[in-house]
Amino acid sequence: MQQTADQQVHNLIRGAGKAKGERGRAKMDIVESKHISEPIKSEAQISHLALDIGGSLIKLVYFSTNSDSSSSSSKDSVAVSSGNEGRPVLEGKLHFAKFETAKINDCIDFIRSKQLRHSGFQKHGAPAGEKCTIKATGGGAYKYTDLFKEKLGICLDKEDEMDCLVAGSNFLLKAVHTEAFTYMDGQKEFVQIDHDDLYPYMLVNIGSGVSMIKVDGPGKFERVSGTNVGGGTFWGLGRLLTKCKSFDELLELSHRGNNRVIDMLVGDIYGGMDYTKIGLSSTTIASSFGKAISDNKELEDYKPEDISRSLLRMISNNIGQISYLNALRFGLKRIFFAGFFIRGHAYTMDTIAVAVHFWSKGEAKAMFLKHEGFLGALGSFMSYEKHGFLNLKVHQLVQQSPVDASRGGDKIHDPPNGELNENQSIDCSICLS
Ligand SMILES: Nc1ncnc2c1ncn2[C@@H]1O[C@H](COP(=O)(O)OP(=O)(O)O)[C@@H](O)[C@H]1O
Ligand SMILES: CC(C)(COP(=O)(O)O)[C@@H](O)C(=O)NCCC(=O)O
Image 1 (cartoon, protein in one colour):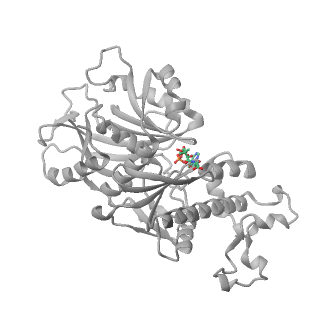
Image 2: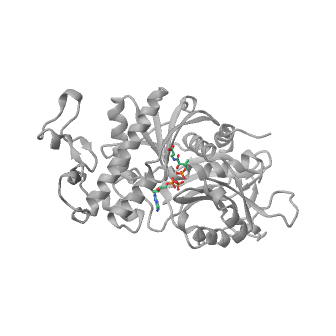
Image 3: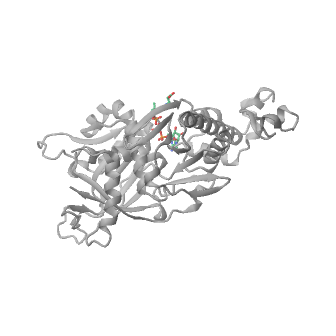
């Protein structure tokens, strides 16, 4: 029988209690990698992989065992009996990786380097010649079907993007205690989620474009709105206006910029005064980029830093406002923001949070997710279980390590070697049913 996403989460969490103290318990660390173009160091064997191929980035989630399962004498033997209903448990790590969609060939090389054909991707019981199949979501799962077939001989088994986002979000919010946090005035605070009081909530995924999804329960949701002014807009316009060569460079520039150089503030219009009657302080942005009307300057006269800052502020503020207005339509007080536009970037989160706070008069709360960009890929990964396709069973969350609270600082948070550090990993286990 097929399981709903929530049943899977329930199994995961229920399993955590059951498994404590069990012998042979397997451990799975969740590790994030960035733009990986070379194989991971160990001879780790990849047994399951899922993709989210978006407009800007390809996200991968894959499980690797800690050792080579072909060596039966290895003391780190891959399959162990957990004693949990006699199912074999795989010991390993859940990895996260991303590639620019424009560099899809790097992603294909990466997958090829993992030798998936030898790692259990063939549908169980399928005839020997049958093609490998991997779960994939996002528009690119359709767009690049032929490319994957041609270059890797892999069939992409498509999962709906919204289904995956919601499944990934529900999973993370329930399974990871330090997944959700608020960010305001430089302060990051983790939010403890009451599993019995999670729904309804608004999920705002800020990818290339923005989707706003009212989530009412496991697998119960409606995409209530969206906006085409999203992460792709920031990166696309930013690239044209600043000549930046990478998204990271554009984000880095914004740290040093001053938006007041370009944005027209209420004070600029009101002679330095607040417009108190309608609740606008003199420092409120009256019109993003509005100063460029009368400054008599050309694009080159503005610093790229200031342009980046204004652009980031404009887009983040707009998304925060639209999200709140949609939450208001349905009486939702909790809004979770995800997607790789955020990148754990303080100024982005602060602007979104302030917009939600301002428009809701403090009634609604903006929250952010630690695994912000991987919801879709995770949901896609979890669908292996939903379809009983590979007999994958993520069945328990053992514990997770404390998260580095400084992560919300005004910097980019992908560590230099591309992998999450110890503090940012989660321990859990999966078993094959
Ligand atoms: N390294 C990066 N390269 C390009 N865009 C990035 C990068 N990191 C973050 N972004 C931002 O994230 C957005 C994509 O977010 P994502 O959630 O992956 O959406 P999509 O599924 O549309 O690719 C980009 O449009 C950009 O704003
Ligand atoms: C079409 C999309 C769902 C694709 O997802 P993405 O690759 O941007 O993550 C998204 O870009 C979107 O919701 N765009 C906004 C379209 C609109 O509602 O106006």
